[in-house]
Length: 508
Image (cartoon, rainbow, N blue to C red; front, top):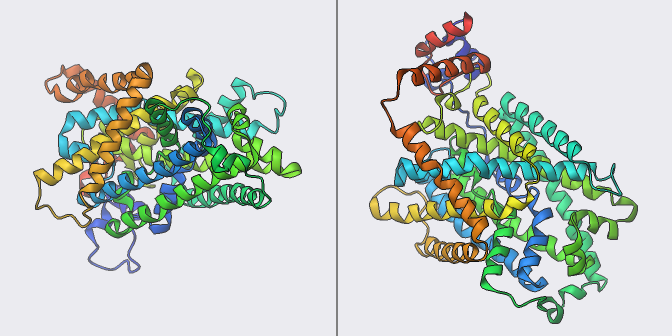
């Protein structure tokens, strides 16, 4: 079968009349499909934000904030900061309509080196570590009913996490539609789970069980709060909110992105902020601050205290939430690899998509393998602070790029243009947060910066150095050729007539 026939049958929408003499040229091309509507767009944002964070971060936020009242303030302000950032990303998303999110915008505005450093830190540590944390949370909560009186074994949690990652990678490789349907379903499931926590908590409050929430008690500090500790509390909360910018990674697959991108942001961010705040209020309706700090599984402790014989609902609910979170992170982080390879910053094989399914299989496999490697290293929960630090560093650079781009190209068409006070306010908060976080945790935050800066020599050797020895090019060509045969992939948006050499190799 030649390349043209494959394209027409597998990746294009076929004409009902086979005798038609003309066909839309775009339908003959292998390309990422626009299958993400407004509902799926909201599900991607909500599904990526609500993962394991709301079940892990409350302990860290309370520990650094020092009081119940200040921790709730941190949760509300954290959502507000995400709203400011998402408004800026909405403008960037329709002004620079490329998949890849932060990386694509920074590369377009500041050039290749800055974009590569952001890509390097994200692909090397940020997203694989986040995926590993979510997968471990999934396996811990699934195994909790089996190992009721002890911590689940190390090997069991890693094995179940790996199986989950492999299964969802297969789903994402098979069909974009399947991946988005899973995201839609589990997003609804996790909202119902958090809704159960909120409703039960509100019932407790109506019964008068809200001692920890009384103003006279809520702001009783266990120690004098410092700006540095508050900054670390925001970093812990930011882990729970991370993912708010992920829809920008799949802009090219969004139906009518100029309309649906900002609409999805306006719907999703306030909803998540409300859910997170009410969930934390619900936690404190049944647990004292000391009990919450002593718990390694806040939702399970909550369920055991209030749900009685139905306490098993909580581990299952958290498992559903984290399962959907893993799917969302795989879907969007693979598009980051795809975009980086398309710009020439990663091997070209990662910019190819399956000839039949039109999914970026090589990029998905890289994300899968990197996550499994992190799982094998050991415990990853201690990495939350510096992963959040890298996250905020990336956000700040991107929004600084928005301000610079306005100055550099003032007459560029911007379908959405936010008030300049929005990015300025975000940048002020960003600078204060990172400075005091670095002051409070110089080793942890400094390590994040070191990881990012290790990309400088890699960029100059791998990207800038054009006259490499011939054997290097031969190795790259061989790996690309073998990868194409194994994964049955081609470059997207190619004319079918230009794909004949590839399909000839595949047929052989």
